Amino acid sequence: MLITIGHSEYWTRAARANFDSFVASGHNALLLSGNNMFWQARYTPDKTKLICHRITAKHNDYDAANPDSMTYYWNYPPFKYTPQNSTAANYLWGAGVYLTASKGYFVNRPQSPLLEGTGLAFGDRIAIKSYEYDGMKIRHNPATNEVEMDSSFITTGSKYTYQVVAYDSISRPSKSDGYFRNGTLLLYKPTPTGGTVFNTCSPSWCSPKGIGAADGDKIKRITLNAIDKSVKGLSLF
Image (cartoon, rainbow, N blue to C red; front, top):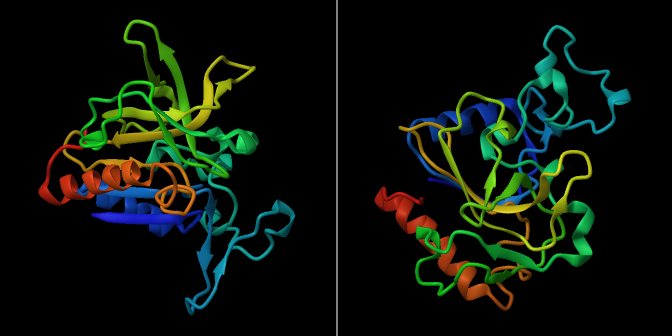
């Protein structure tokens, strides 16, 4: 089992490839963090420095014969490796512009094994104050009254199943396509035989604004459920 906490923003291509291989081999990844995998970074040959240029004009020290050595945000089209293909979420689809209004997550799947022992029901709020979120492309399904992800959001062929456990309470539809852009508490299983990614999409999950706040007992229980079930080889879905 792999666990990240805090603000896991800068990843090398090798690290992402190892992450994908780890999950594909049947292991679970618990991303108790946000802004995950937003920038491609690289190390100096002696491994003493992590490099990331955040302005395209500064990209003058990479190997032109190897575009993967460029450092920039992972959504840069030539990289062809958007974050959601690994994590089912993307900072560009998060709630970064609504930070002052962030109130937490509304429960979408109360029957989720992750919520066992929390007493949470459909529509209940998990109080967490996030200063930024990762999110996914979701919409309301009137037939089930649940929020679900649009499968086209993940561009790779590996998208076996996914689930919106809860979603940010301050979301609103995009003006361009009607889909919501918001923070999302999610599960993602890329292949039938692989592991599951549990993504909290929030840098505040393990912070005083999350696990140390009013609903910290619920956040602790959700986290322990994810860990215990992963250790025992039980399904998170």
